[in-house]
Length: 376
Ligand code: UD1
Image (cartoon, rainbow, N blue to C red; front, side, top):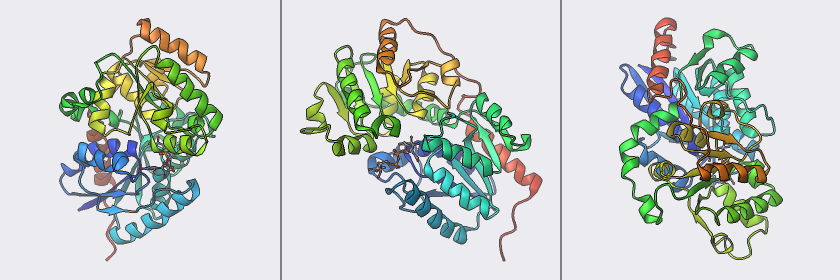
């Protein structure tokens, strides 16, 4: 039996591991074990995603949430090492670019366990982002690199990664969208929030570059207030953003009380969030995943960042990189509202079958290389 550990730690990871869980569970001779690092621990950031995506309870929860970057990474490493001691897996699969991705791949590669990175090769070329460091370091050490868009192939080749490690398989996040399409259609969230289809802007902001500096965050919140005079703004607020608002003195009363024109709601589950997304007139965000999901759905997306590690969403999709200047973002929003925007197209292999392709490659490699003999 080939034993494969799937690692997930933070919200975007859950969406990526669900299709992998299905693909490997449907394969003969494979035992899949789910390990949750606990990086995201609130019900709304974690539990609901397992329910919505049909994922089973993780076999292990490392409860390594909170703390600064170093402590979080170190806690995950120590606790994951103990799990590997017990399980002696043949494969470890990590996804995305969060601290859990790097922490678990470091431990696993050092123990000589074949380690696969899903969503490899993406680069923002901005080393001030913790995610960029996680991407660079994980790709430098992982054994198999599964790439979601062509830019990732180019980046890995430029970094001198050998061809036999790199596999262009498409975007596993889209698998989840395709899988959950009916449930997303059936969500009643818009009704609950009194929103009409195509009538509102959906906003998510949580990157350190936007929310950790009080001046920037205040400016952003004021800008969103202005935006709400043009179009209703729905803002499911990430815990990091909520915490920043609370500690920076921006809030006099309560977040909702200080910004009455914004519809600030808690983070939404996967199904409800995707329904909000699908019915939005436009999206304003600094998220990575949303740039991809809007591209697949053909919804205009204004990204409040200087760069994107997902250039295909700008080159082929409906994403606009606004930079950090909010005046520029306002101009793009105006053209989105006026309907004078480009039409996007769906990037290659974003077809709902990426996890199956990944499983095929990993199982084929096992046939070629054999599986590690368990310690007897
Ligand atoms: C992390 C990822 C980021 C991803 C984002 C998605 C890293 C470096 N960053 O950022 O790439 O886009 O997740 O959400 O891994 N918190 C809660 N409840 C939770 C989770 C977090 O209150 O369920 C708090 C933490 O304790 C911390 C803050 O929110 O104070 C930020 O959490 P953290 O995991 O450090 O990073 P994110 O900003 O969520």
